[in-house]
Length: 451
Image (tube, rainbow, N blue to C red; front, side, top):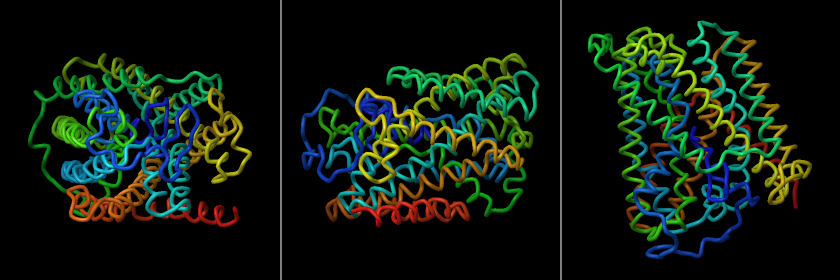
């Protein structure tokens, strides 16, 4: 999750794929701002390197500070195959959304394409899935940051939970006061994350031992699917490029190039980190709450965990701020447009703070954190609930691409491949797929009672 799936759009913090930015606007109206086929159109000043950097920033997220350890716990060294599989799946996904963005430049993202292909009900389902994914995702992200603080100070589960709750309070108060992370700040945080990953890998790889690759699949080969279900979190965000399509100088040429380079950069970074966690930390990776801190400690000593904790808290707070801002705006916009109760619409006007929607997001986030803490189940259920929603949205998005893109085009071929890949990812969600299905049923039931 990136801001994995929740990011910074052209108008300010936005939930990627919804088109809802700080300026208000909710999506998905058919034809809104698309201008038809954007091929070959000189629309903005964004270059391929700039677009690549923004795309990488949209996909990289705080999940990578914790998920390598969770994946190793699920599948052992075989989790490397899950990482590789997700990188491979990213190719048709990125190509699909690049093709959609090039043909239909629009800030509405997946919700707009769902509207075009399937109508307003599908668009409402996308909005609900994004809106209700944020509370569970934010609680998990806060827990990730809390685990780094606990590792740095020698604390335990209580330290992790208290820190996580503190982060959630901080971003709630900041958003209620109208303090938002700017696009430049979010871009800087993405740069900090890249630096943290490179430092952790660079310091730790000299201590790698290939003996830690054995046994390769201690939990059986099916565990690779379980690990992949967790790792979807780190690969959500490929749809973000559609928000920027209209900003490229030549969308039809530049956008696919930026997407291709971004896939390579993200894939290499993730595979390096995953390999380092498995080969350097070995079996202890499964029990690590702060794997990047542990990697840095191999090269710099225990004090490196403090540096990692500071970076993790900054990254988590910045990311959660974008989560909350985007989701609050989305909920208010959905309320305004009748897709959610009108009570949530307060604050949907440009320049206003949607405090009611923010209160719902924050409240559900605290419920998620409290429930998993009392149950003692850790962050894995929160991650899987969130990724289940992401995969469901991807299914709608690539399904729309199959319907909208011209037959025989490279984009449509990529969309068909992506649809097959997403179907496989849906299978990895297991019982957690019931969550987005329940959300979809609720959204459709609510819409059926509206004029």
